[in-house]
Length: 177
Length: 177
DNA sequence: TCTAGATTGACAGTATACTTACAATATGGG
DNA sequence: CCCATATTGTAAGTATACTGTCAATCTAGA
Image 1 (cartoon, each protein chain N blue to C red):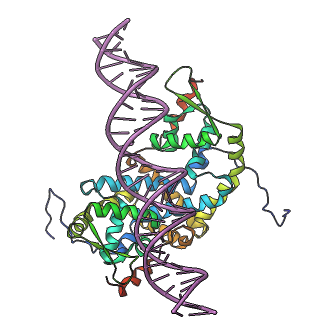
Image 2 (cartoon, helix red, strand yellow):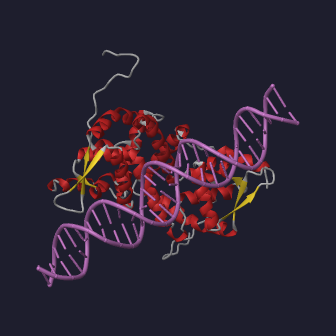
Image 3 (cartoon, rainbow over the protein chains, first blue to last red):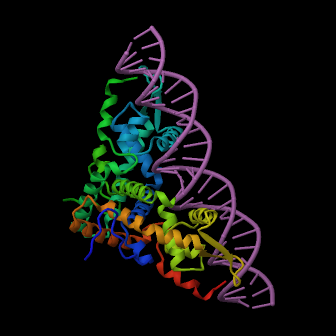
């Protein structure tokens, strides 16, 4: 078979079918994300918390006094998006924002009492949701899928616009407000 | 082991850690979706099409004269969301909307000439994007992951708010405008 | 046939998720 | 010490993705 170097070899155009969409990884990831959010919201409806708001609460619980920029790195959200999330959590009185003494630009984040209560109480519902997402698969397949997904997300970390930087969470420890 | 019936057995509360978030399927699906969109947009930047707009174009190409409600079932989007997507595709002149003669409520969707051209030309970029998403895995693992994901999305179809109804696409065939 | 109920597209509202831009503030090199 | 540069939070703009609701229209049962 002849093989040109330089520009990529023009291959036969693939047929444009819905099947090509349905079997594409990108489509499957989007679908699975839709399904996951739907299940989460349903299981946690009593708490009026979205998946993102839940993740933010956990991170603030784990890193009290973290600032918004570091929080965005720890849960891999965009900084701008996170601003709105924080606003909503504050308006629900689940978190508190206090200005830092050391850096006038920074607002440090803490769980409120009611935030800590909600977080503690929502855990069983969150776990139920996570189980339900994988429920249709055989237990061995669940493990396989989780393992491969974990690998893939880790290896593709830099490909996303907001890479996860879990280690950033430690940097606020010297900056108590 | 004692076992109460009625309410679920209260199990030991799990520790609240970021690791619990990072290993949860819901988190991995969200991350993977972020990464997939980022790769798609990067590879297809020359065409100024989002993944959703691309899927809509393919579906309209495959089912010319489909209406918005049926389109939403075929690509598993919410009907309201799809309205905006259609508007944008129309404003870019990639599709055309024509009122149906048989049903005054319905607007039928068709690819424009430039829509067909864009769709044909974008295919190689889309394929490159789909490959890149799974690139970090060994080929055998890519197959395994895709297989499990396909199963899971299919078995969880009804759990999402907007289940896929691929067969709905056929119903417009009697309704030519 | 006539009307109760369903469907269709549109709109408003909420919540991610990203982009770029900006002012206030911090920091480090010269 | 001072200024170029970087960081922080915020805001405006775009695009999903869902919830409702609504009016126009269609359809089917009594």
